[in-house]
Length: 63
Length: 542
Image 1: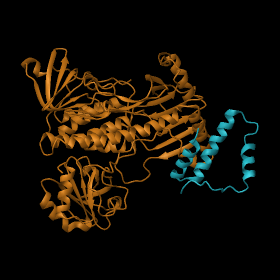
Image 2: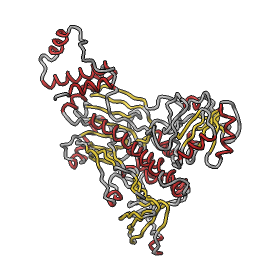
Image 3: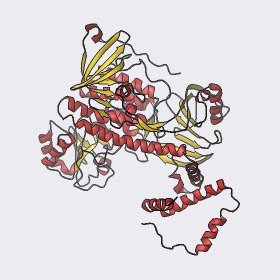
Image 4: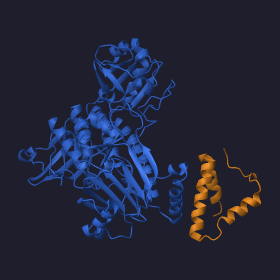
C-alpha cells in the first residue's frame, strides 16, 4: 500500500465542514486532544506501517 | 524485615605469601550477573576468582521480575527450583486508566512449559540462593575485596585488589566486569557511558503487608489515588509488595523519601484500613545507556556494567543473566584453546544486539509513561482515552514491554536454514521447552540440554541418529525425540507431541543447539558433513 495523493474523499466539502465543526466550542487544548484521537482512529483504519510512515513524512514537509 | 546475611571475609592467601594470584578468569562483582558467571564457569570446570567490595547481598529495591528465559538459565545453573519455590509466579498484567481496566495481557497463554512467564523474587534473595549454589560447587566469593586498578597485558589482564589486610594482584586470562551500573572497572578503563536520562522521578517502595491483591502486575495511568501520575503494584516473596509512583521531575527527591511524605501516598493507594510497613524507599531517575563495545581486549563487561535500561519491562536483571549465559561457554572454550579468541567477538555482537533491543523497548515504555513534549503527552492521553472503547488503542498502551530473549536471527555462529520450517523457533533463538517422558517420568526438554553442544534428533531421523552419534559422540551429546515408547538413555518420548509441534518436526528434523541452548542449525535430514560444518561454525572455527 502506498499513500494516496489522488482525491478519494467522497463529498469533500461535507467532510471538511464536519472536521471543522467537531472543534466548535473547544479550547486549544481540547482541540489538540480531538486531533490526536482522530489521528489514532484513522491510523488504525489504514493499518499498514509503510503507508503510515509516508503520511507522517508527507505531513512534516515544509514545517 | 529481611536480615541480610553477612558473608565472612577471609584474608587472601596471596597476602601472606606475597604471590600474585593466577587464574583463568577474574570476576569483579558478586551481584546476580557476576554470580551467574561464577556458577557457569564452575560448572564448566574453569578456574576463576570472584571478588566483591561488600560482604552481603544487595540492599533494598532492585530487580524483582525474573523472566521465563532467565528461569531456564537458572535451571541450567542449578538455582531454578530454589528461585521458583521461593518466588511468586505470575503471567497476567493489567493496565488501568483512571479507575477502569483498559488492557490486560497474558505472557504465557499455552501449557507445556516447565517455567512460568515470570517469577518475582527480590534480588537479594536471588543472590542468597546463588551464593549457596556457588558454595555447593566448592567455590566462595572473596568478600570485602575491592578491585582498585585494572591493566591490560598482552596475555591477559591484571587487577589490583584492596583488602583490610593490604593489597594484592590477580593476573587472569580474562576479567569479567560485573560491577553494576556504576562500574568501577568501566571508570578505571576510562570508557564512555552514553545514553539518555529521562527527566522524571519515581518513588519506589517495598512495603510489607498482607494483601489480597492477585499475583498480577497492576499498572495505573492517572489513578484516582495518585492523580496525574503512574502507579505500579507487584507482589514479591514474603508478603513484600513493590510500589512504584511517578512523582515528577520537579519534586525534591530527599523530601519525597521521607516517611511523612511516603506513607500518605501509599495509604491513598492501598486504602485507609490496610496495615503496612515500609521496608525500603528510594527516589529514582532512569536512564538508558550502554558501552559502545562490551569486550575491551581482555576485559569483558556484563549486565548493568555494560548496559542500563529503565525498569519498566524487567529488562535489566534478565538481560544481565542472559549475558552470562551467552559469555561463559565461549570463555570456557577459549581458555581451553578449543576455540579461537575471536569467538569472544560473537559475545559482543550478540549481546550488543540484545542491549539495543532492550534499550529500544525500555525507551519506548519510558517515553509513553513520561512524555517528553506537549505533543507526545497529547498523543499519549489520546491513546489512553481511546483505549476504554477501542480495542486497537489498547495495543498502543505501553506500561512496559516485558523481557523476552533476543533471537539473534542473524549471527556468525548460526547456519542459515536451507530447509523450510513452519514453527516460531529459528536459528539464533533459544530452544523452546516441551514436556517429554524419560523412562517413567515426565520431564522438561530444556532441563536435558545445555552446558555443551547438543544434537536433537527427531523420530523420522532415527536411523541417522546412531551414525551421527558415532561420528560426533565426543563433540556433541545426541538425544533422540521419539513418538513411540522406547527405553534407553538420551531417548525422550514426545508423548504429547508438543516437542514435535514446537520444533516443526513432523517430517523429521535435526537441531544443533549451542551450550546456551540457542539453535545453531537445523535440517530435515542432514548429512554428516552438514552437521560437521555447522558445528565448526557454531564453535567459532570458521
